[in-house]
Length: 297
Image 1 (cartoon, rainbow, N blue to C red):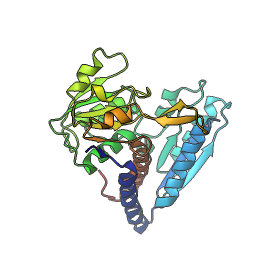
Image 2 (cartoon, rainbow, N blue to C red):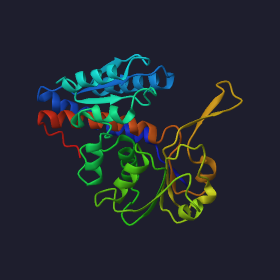
Image 3 (cartoon, helix red, strand yellow):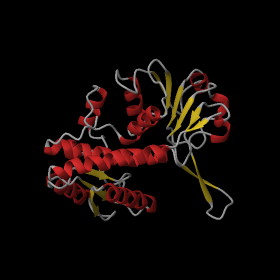
Image 4 (cartoon, rainbow, N blue to C red):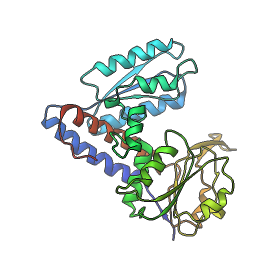
């Protein structure tokens, strides 16, 4: 019987843990603050930001939001980031991606103070992650690690395949799984849309993390019986329904469920964990900046 990995339940546990750490900070006179910055008219981005602000309110984090006109010059966004870097009540900064074409994404990531980079995307934080001394682990890969731990999936000595090589998920996921640390010590192969014989690579994988951004790219015929399948993808596919679309992952869920030992659904798997780990990183950042031990790794 395939076990369905419930990201909503694990994320609720993380949020509860974060709320307890918020109380620890409150005892020290600190209220953690997360600033979100939106420079986009994209409805999906607006929804993501509003959800993150609601998450903050739920656990006692002060949410600060700044809108920057999508047609404004890049300098206006950079000035906004500089202002937030200087604010003592802001401990974490998240600029919702994507940003407009006239704004350089890499420059945006470099502009954020590394101590407030709760996404973990600043080059300094990426380097620390690769070196095994992470300041903040990127939210989605760290969330995947938490899911694996919650369901007692053994990573040590396991053969893991990460399908996808993005800076946000694929690369940091591979780095975390390979490190000599809890929820690490795996033998990791990174594949992508141009990998030859993807089926052959997946056939021997004990753990598969699908993060290629391609709808239903991996199906059950490619998987090893009993494998743990973590589906990071969330893709909108047109359908003849009232909504006109449905959300699917990078894995063909029905066929994979016939083979896998455990699998995450879409939605309800990795997505809730990404949001929960952002709160986790924000509280950790507040503790670091005020020298308060919040007991988070």
